Image (cartoon, rainbow, N blue to C red; front, top):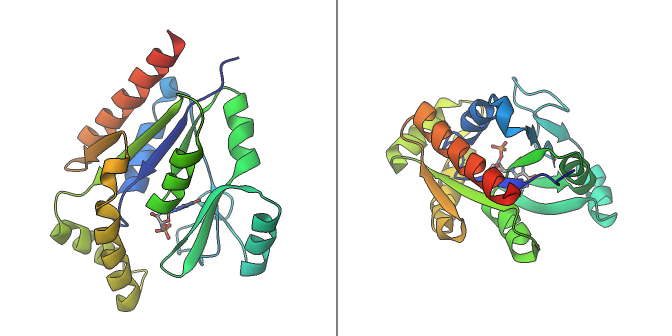
Length: 193
Ligand code: 5GP
């Protein structure tokens, strides 16, 4: 069986990565599986352990890190996040195209170490900073200080978009999702041929 693709979607906090990812994953023909990350961040009210993230303590994160369990890991506005290596490998070995929704420094770690031509990297950008601020604030789950930190971080992350193979504008959820689906479809076809 052909090993699945590794697909990375990055973009500033609030750009709509989660919404787009869920829409893209509805397409069964793409044979996608989502890589559930490990994080030390507290769950938001709507989030479930084992579905949105594996929520762990700092100590548990340190233990995973020491065991070399992460494909990549990063700190983001005071919390830590990591991609479980075995989970991703198992899915890819089953032929699944694995979808990672991760921030820029973790994505860079993968890009710099990756051997093979089955990596797809996509950076999602917002139509404007005003829109981004409105979306981060609209989430209401974070206090003002964290919102400002996330916006500052977003500005720094936006400068890194040229590291990615594709830059997609999230001007419209349906349109941007279709663009990402077609990027993935083309890559699947290119790898098969
Ligand atoms: P949030 O706290 O909003 O869920 O996520 C904050 C940022 O961390 C987002 O940009 C999200 O994509 C990123 N992120 C989530 N999981 C991981 C991970 O496993 N590794 C890295 N490097 N970033 C992650």
